Amino acid sequence: MPKINRYVDISTVDREAKKDYIDRHSPFLTCAATAKAGQKFPVTVRVGKEYTHPDDNDHYIKSVALYNRETLLAEAGFVAGALGGQGQKGQAEVTFQIVPTGKKLELTAIAYCTKHGLWECDPVEVTVEE
Image (tube, rainbow, N blue to C red; front, side):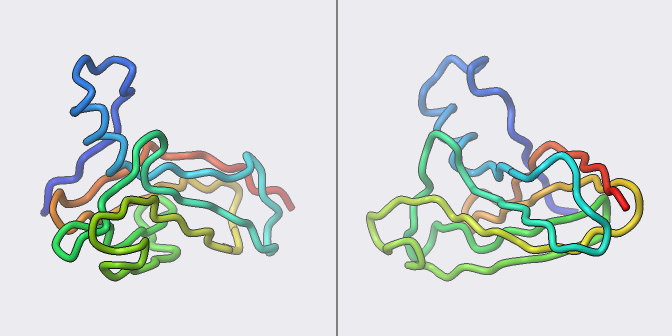
């Protein structure tokens, strides 16, 4: 099993370089707190909030995946250069349209950096209404 890194509150980190490292690799999940069963529900995942990630041939965000607990709901892949290429920095961002079922979702996003591995966000609970 590969190591999965988690975001920590960067306001508690002293060194700027460490804040940059943690933030630019972490996925941040944005969605409404409630969804309607059987209707499209947008979920946006952005890698990095305050810092941008490199987009080099050997160091870039390769993929972003969205899970409901252990179930993979959606995945997006990126290639080197998708955010501008060598020397450029940017945020990989994707909006997934999922159709919720059940009474509750527990959404988690995982981003894969080709140099620093897997990064996971904290779960986000969504209530599913009829």
